[in-house]
Amino acid sequence: MRAFVLAVTLIAFLTPAPPASGAGSKSAGAGGKSAGAAGKSTGGGGKSASGSGKSPRSSRRANPRTGRISPAFAELVKAHKRSDRAALARVADRMGLVRLGEATASGEPGVGEAALSALPLVRGGVLLIGAAADQISVADWPRATAAATALGALLDGAVPTALEEWEVPPDVVARACAALRALAWRSDAALATRLAALDAVAAAAPSCGSGADLAPLARDGTPSLRRAATAVAAVGNERETLLRDAIADGDRTVSAAAAAAACRIETRTGQGGKTEPPLSQAIAAARTMATAPTTAPEDAVEMLDCLAAAGTPQDRALLDELQRRPPSPLRDRAVELGVRSPPGKP
Image 1 (cartoon, rainbow, N blue to C red):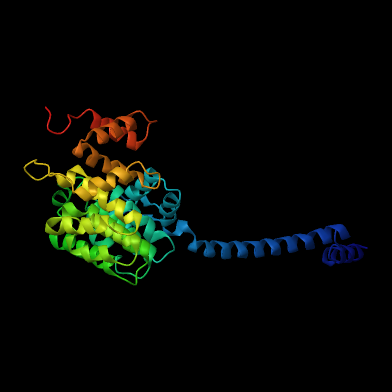
Image 2 (cartoon, rainbow, N blue to C red):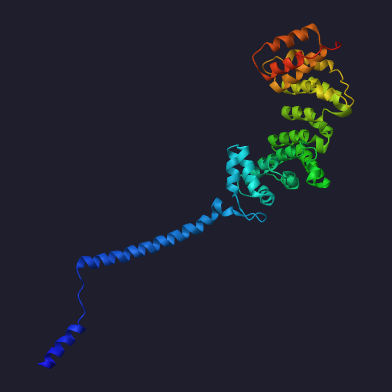
């Protein structure tokens, strides 16, 4: 009897237990599939994580001087596209000059233009004049345009001591000035790029000198180039001849720009403070063009200096009439000139 009980006990111990239920088995299978799906999901996440290495966030890096995380290039581009100068300046300052210099040469779409636009806004931006000059000679015209505009602002002498305080080498400044002139001469460049270069040469005159050497462009076949070149090159001994020719130009925009340049009182005032009278051709042009609706407002405002200088009863009557018009730049300039003493009177 004892042997029988022992045998039954041994059989019960060695026999495997059946599954709790069929549903439980299926549930366990589903769990296995779920785990497999989770594994696949994890694998997909791994791919996503590796793919995110190309996202804008990946271009962030620590500032070597401060240790803080530098903004991504995408933040610079975003601020530039919104034309938000304050945000652009903040991002550029956080980025630092070293990283900003790298951005100017970046091949990523829009990054170079955004970085170049930020240079005049960031503290110490003049230290990147050389980096901007390097982008002038590229065949990417939007980038070259941005570089020219940046150099015009960096070299405009708004802070007369900036180049000296930041110890910008004179040869770097000379190279940038030469690059702007070379870009203005490039016949293969986009028109907008050449115009930007001419504007930059005019703005950079305190650092680069006058643009008198660009006078031949005032006879170019493109009216907009003639207009810009006239404004830049109307200095020195050839000033009067150049302006006379331009005032007689068949294109009204060129003629108006030349008359405005000839009338502008600042260009007629010598170093000793003596003011030269405007050209007779400029006075005649101002009388017919200053109030014409087709004349650019910025040109019309400058032409009023000719009317004030001529001082005839008709000229003074026109200035008085302009003073009574609704507020505008033209009316404001007429008011300024109206409070001055007429020529020849105390």
